[in-house]
Amino acid sequence: AFLSCIVSIETLLRRMECGLRAIILGTLFFAALLLIASDYVGMDDPQLLGHAVQLGALLLLLRDRVMVAAALFAVSLFIKHNLLAMPLAAGLWLLLQDRRAGLHFLLWGLAFALSGLVLFQLVFDTSLLDALVSPRLSSLANLQAAILHLWWAPLPILAMAGFWPDRHSLFCALYAGLALLLGLGFAAGDGVAANAFFD
Image (tube, rainbow, N blue to C red; front, top):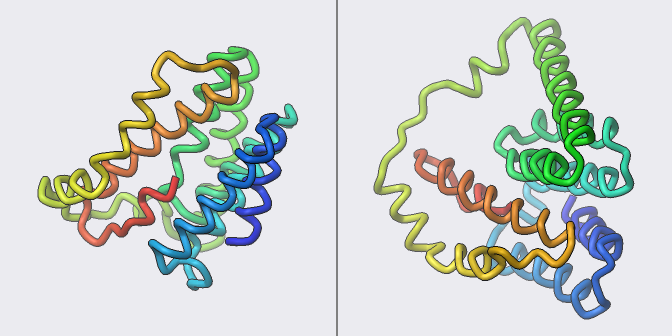
């Protein structure tokens, strides 16, 4: 999954018409950050697999394969349920670019997600949503600790505010902003690790 993410990031950056230096920096930044600052590389955990599937979905979306991308994003949520930032950013981005394509994407995504929930209920005879919304202690202390560790994170997002020279920059800004907000929301819960901010 780690290697797949690296290849997907490189492919996405090429698709977004980035220069060679940006492609190398983007892929090295991802790889170095995970290798140095986390223990998720090689871990028996669904986190990076979920990201790999979402990066593949994004690549399909950039090739105008809206329905297949929506299906893959839905599948990714069954791999790791808190990976909401990229599908939400993709839906919002599409709505801003082409309302019809955005609605098409969101409706297909919802249909695939609901179908998955029904299928889960039929196969396992239990509600996945009940398991996902089970009580978890949350606290302001957890949120404060996350903010203290990530005080710098909003700076590049704010620096991009109003500066979207192309549609890909707009997507990246939406994705980064949503990822930060959702990560902080998840970080308030007990037992949530740094992977809540991998997006």
